[in-house]
Image 1: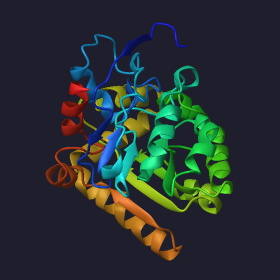
Image 2: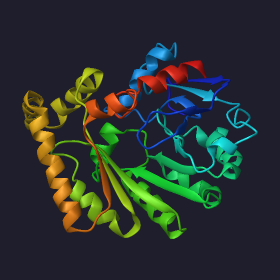
Image 3: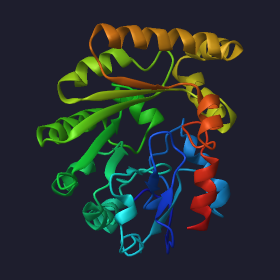
Amino acid sequence: MLPGVKIKEVQTKNLITKSNLPDADYVINPYTGCLHSCIYCYARFMKRFTGHNEPWGRFVDVKVNAAEAVPKNGEKYKNKAVFMSSVTDPYLELEKKYELTRRVLGRIVGFEPALSIQTKSALITRDIDLLKGFKQCRVGMTVTTLDDTVRAAIEPHASPVADRLSALKKLKQNGLSTYVFIGPVLPFITDWREIIRRTRDFTDCYYFENLNMYGTIKKDLFAWLEGYNRNRLASYLSILRAPAVYWEAVKQEITEYCAAHGITYKLYFDHKAIRKTAGVENGAGRATRAATERKS
């Protein structure tokens, strides 16, 4: 375990909660908080609902009764889109000890939901046996960069890139539907074309999300860029002067590339539009999810 990280065991009442995400009816978060310490993390807004003084990425509340909090009657979840997880990673390092995600999966498989599970951890391969039991299951791996030196700086405690790609390949080899979440797309850093080329043989679909350069995300990202590449920092400052122009151009590039190569994809670029139609629950800020999480 990382030194200086506060781990707290808590009880939850509402594990499976309604979602306003565009692609999910319900969400499951076995943990509150995260250990990956990604400098671009949108979920840091959750801190204000936790009572923690520690920085985001330095605390986790472990919902030790997560499996027991799964309702006994799951009829209402049949064929409903259930997403794990919206404001944490279901395969944190802690999952090796607590096995909350594994036990929850074992409880909900009989409900026959349309499960979607996303992670930055190769630990997900441990649960292939359970995932194969779902009639509808999509497994996603987040890949922001293929450069593991950059990964170690911006996602220091997530799985190395090679481990993620190997895990994704293994999931596909076991007959599971897979996707790669390329997000956020870091300007001049995320080589999304190369990510597609490296994963095309074992990936069914790609999701893209643009970078939200506001608030503390901007502060942390720019602090890293200052040491990483000052020219890149200048470029990011330039993008901020006209972000819509930059991201529209990127959207067009992605659209044309995917169309030309027969790639199934989806864009999550317009955060304001998603917030307006999805109760502010999206990659830029999930206020509705936070309010629900606070009650659990």
